[in-house]
View 1: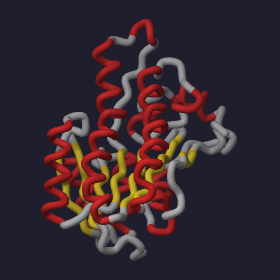
View 2 (view 1 turned 135 degrees about the vertical axis):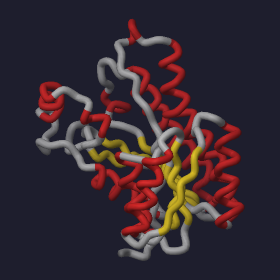
View 3 (view 1 turned 90 degrees about the vertical axis):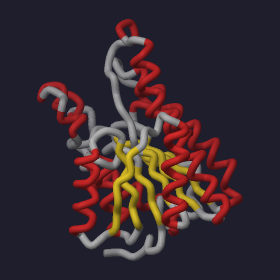
Length: 249
């Protein structure tokens, strides 16, 4: 087990399963005390905590909705009050509502943007208060390959994830002088519950477009996040790291 993040506190949003769980496990393995955020599925979040503990790491679950500004302020405030600092924020919480624009409802549009984009704003703003004060921080935002290349039926998701890229680059300029870096990781197709819902035919069609010839594992995405969250990445900011097997270059 690496000790690169020993003494650091990390918050991973949407860490009850999938990519978020893999990220939480990877950061804990590097020595961080991890706060596993969830919004509905406490049991799954507690399973992430259990897995971290079984591997010798430290973690706890904390529920709040990233789209609720007051809940975010209270949640992040609780972390800083209890643990004294917040060094790493991984904005991973997200949802997708797939529909062609002509069939996409306004409610679904706003629901996707509320979590996937506004949630990144809420969490980053709250975390920055501690990071700027301690003059150290790492913010890593999860975006997507569709933010760059688009995808029919995912206009809301792609718009939100594209907004995350613009937010990442702008915020990076604002806080670089305080030794706070802000970067993004853009996965392609990843083997998670979300991609598991695809029909075999559709999954095969997507995989056929990937030069690497396969989908990514959640651990491969987590490895990219862990690098950007590390002290070694102190001179990397405003960057979008693509983990997509060559799907988009």
